[in-house]
Image (cartoon, rainbow, N blue to C red; front, side, top):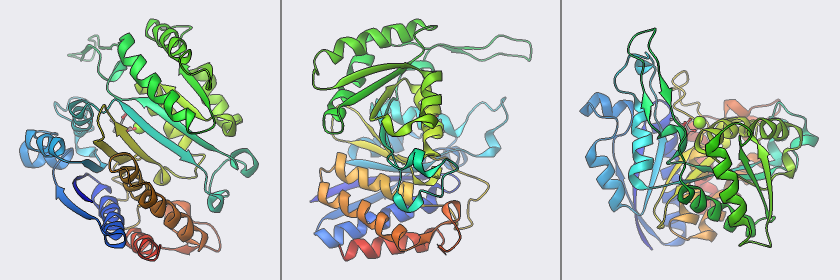
Amino acid sequence: MEARVVTLPGDGIGPEVVAEGVKALQAVADRYGHHFTFEERLIGGCAIAATGSPLPEETLEACRRADAVLMGAVGDPRYDDPRSPVRPEQGLLAIRKGLGVFANLRPVKVYRQLLHASTLKPEVIADVDLLVVRELTGGIYFGPRQEATGSDGTAYDTMVYTADEVRRIAHIAFRLARRRRGKVTSVDKANVLAASRLWRRVVTEVAAEYPDVTLETMLVDAAAMHLLRRPAEFDVLVTANMFGDILTDEASMLAGSMGMLPSASLGEGRRGLYEPVHGSAPDIAGQGIANPLAAILSAGLLLRHSLELEEEAQAIEDAVEAVLAEGYRTRDIQEEGTIPVGTREMGDLIAERISHA
Ligand code: IPM
Ligand code: MG
């Protein structure tokens, strides 16, 4: 098949890990006889430096024309000053909104080979296989906001949800649960927030259309606790934008490293935005030591969700398992007795396995 992929390497370690994601896609194309074209565009801090905007119009247009978008990360300490009028993260929020990708899928899987890489006990995390479905284009990230002018000013952000926004994300969660273990945990703060009470009511209504799926509702503080206490009992978690942001960083520690977590952001059509859950990690940027597996696994999700190439997606996931089983590790997941590799070597090993799939 022919497919057009826009790559948005972004900032920090973004370019290093996206290069390995592209390498994996190219290996898939060669192995399975597909033709993928890659077009690189600017987003985030590098886009601000080049154009003044964190999401140049041209980037958004290229993404709209593409079949899928593979992104690295945005974020640059140069813009950390709270008075900074423009920030790289605005580019990320704008592209999610601009592409209408309201459903962010963040699968968390614990690789047997990494059981001991986590700070949590192996017996607690052994059977973890969960999927966080994070609402991505609404909630407190996008509600009415006021910046404080001086240091004694007032600032606010507002969590707004419409019933339609909740309904569409709930349907995605239930549909996905059907293909998994048939359980949805809806996470909210309905004991305090009006937006969460709407969330809970609508999710419960939608659940009636999926009698084969079990719905459980849970407050977000309790969910944060249970993710550490009994993570293997979760199947699909569906939650609002900010709760999903926080819970997925927490959940990444089940997998041992942020460097292991991919994500897929989907809207109404097939086109999606694929990115690692991790950030730009400026402290290790440019050193060739970042873990590219989250970006490579994101490329796998791209094959599955945007191109409907299930076998090829599986080939990427199998390659990751194989390379981990052989003992290769980037620094973030290293243990005694494993073979240390850098970003590029890890990508080469994966591409190699894909070629022989
Ligand atoms: C994520 C990130 C982003 C978010 C930041 C960089 C804006 O933390 O994708 O989880 O909060 O959505
Ligand atoms: Mg986050």
